[in-house]
Every structure is written in structure tokens, then in C-alpha cells.
Picture 1 (tube, rainbow, N blue to C red):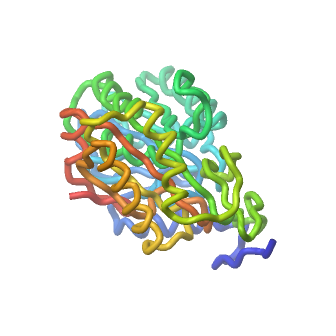
Picture 2 (picture 1 turned 90 degrees about the horizontal axis):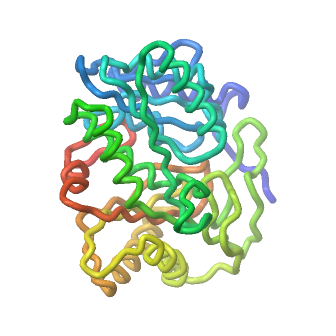
Length: 334
């Protein structure tokens, strides 16, 4: 497999330089704690429930790109595909805490779980209350009745959007966590990989695929999916992804959903729109209405080619928070 071409300086400093560029991209609205991948909005109202998101770098614009209006107040980032340390998480939480506690939202991975849990214990000893929402939307792994076995992929976007709106409007920590947990429980996703991404420091691909192969259900870091097969048509790929998503919740005729088609890094908008066309055909056939759709790049995996599909089933409450305007470096919604 060919060595990927990447536009870097010193690969060992790539994450630090990316973080510097990210802060500058916010034009003065976001700060960073010196020595840590801890980002924070500079203007957070007093008495606000704070929202902290986080995970490994390499998935930009998530997580650091989601700080802003009706979104997150802070983010904790580790090295590429590596959880932020408990110390980094604590620094980010301290920077955004305004007396009402902090809600954590992050993907369900063992390193993130361990480090955010440790940080929650340290913060509790300082008198800072936290609540945890682990995103577990990937239907490619784990049975429907065992969500803790599931990975968090692009469903993070929906949970952050809902949690951010709730944290902006509600003043009770448990109420914000309840709304965020509802969003998480109603979100399902699946991805497909066409070619691998690579690690900036080593240049090595995160997995291997034949030139004519794809992997249905592959995770955001190159984790094993449900089927490796020959490349086929866009409609056939979408059909294979949508079937397990729809039956997992299950989504049913009469449901109203939000739809997100997420580029994993190197897939063109041209291809994403062809996939979107097929997704909408399937939803119309099943009698499922789309309230709002998003097509673009939010949770990437370096230059991995492929995409994921996420659905969030809506009720009036979730629709309200989804529809709130949002603005950040990496995500905006009117």
C-alpha cells in the first residue's frame, strides 16, 4: 500500500500545530489552556450549565470545532486517535465551569471512558459536579440490547447539537443530561470505508483494503466492520447500511428524523449527494419523514475515504433543540 502524502511540518508536532491553527480559526472567541489540549469559549454566561466534549484528535472538525452558540463550551483533545488525559479534561472543565456543573459528551471508547471517569472523580473532590453522556450509536457492533458494547461515531454531532441547545436554555444539570441522553438513545449510525486514513506521525495506514474492496460498518479509527466485500454501486452500499440502522431502534412508519451523512475524510460532496439521494428514497418508502438533513464533513478520520449515515428519531423536545441556531468553527445550523 502506498505511503499517504500529507501536508505537515514536523510530524511529531503535527497535533500541537493543528491545535494552534484551530484556536486561530476562531478569531479570538476561543482560548486554550497552556500545555494541554483543553479549549474553552472565552465568553460563557455566569450560572450556565457547561458542556464539555472531547476525544482524540484526527477527527476534525469534531471535537474542538464544535465550540460556540448553542453548542459546546469547551473541548478536551488528545493526540491523534488517543483519549485526552484526565488532567486535560479537568483543565477544560475548570475553564468552562460557571457554578452549575459540567455535562461530558464523548464517544464510547475504553480510553475515553476511563479518563473522563477519572476526571469526574477529581472534579467532584473540588466541588464540581459532572454528568456523563457516552455516545453509542454504531449499529455495526453490539446487540440492540447492549448499547455499552457500541462505538460512538458521527452520532456525536446530533448529541452535541441537542446537548448544546439544552445547556444554553436549561439551568439544571440533571435536566441538561436528561435531554442529551434522550438524543443519544434515539440516534443510530453506520459507516463504510473505501480506503484507509493514516497516522500523521508514522505515515502508516490505519488499516488495509484491497484496491477493489470496501468494508461495511468500519469504525472511525479503522475498527473491524460487519462485512468486507468488493466495491459495488452507491445504491447497494446505502441499502446495506440503512437496513441495520432502521431495524435497530427500530425506526417505524410515521417517525420523523434528523439525517446526517458524514464524510470520513476523503469522499467528495458529489458522492455524498448520490448517497443522500438513495437514503431519502429509502426513508420515503418506509414512511419516515426527514425534518432536517445535514451532508458534509464533521467526524473525519484523516484521509479515510468513505462516509457514515446517522438518524436521530425526533419528538417535540428534541426538534426544539435541533432547530436552535448554532455557530462554530466546524458546525453551523440555521
